[in-house]
Image (cartoon, rainbow, N blue to C red; front, side, top):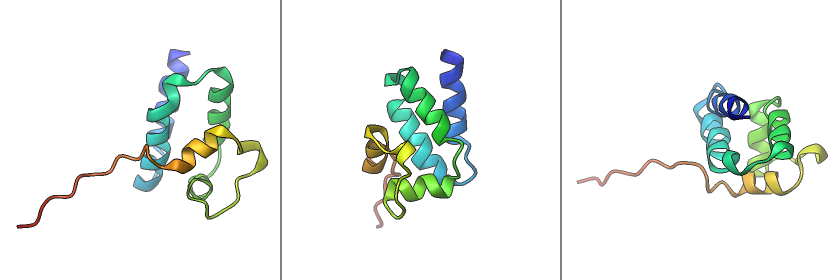
Amino acid sequence: MAARRRRLKFRSWHRGTKEADLLIGGFCDRHLNSWGEDMIAWYESLLEEQDVDIMAWAIGTQPVPERFQGAAMDAMKVLDYIPMPEKSAKT
């Protein structure tokens, strides 16, 4: 299971665009350690989808397919897991 979790973390943070990395990788970082077998299987299936689709579902610009609807997608939609760089004060 540990190797499976490491693989998911890597796949989450190496999507191809910075935006997808932040959204999908941030979600993984926030929730992966609390997931059991069923959630890991759901997430593995989600990672097979295109980044633009996952991002559209998370931000609500496209309807979520039935197979991905539920508490996990609801958590992804909150977007509170995305690390935000601190703004520097202008002088």
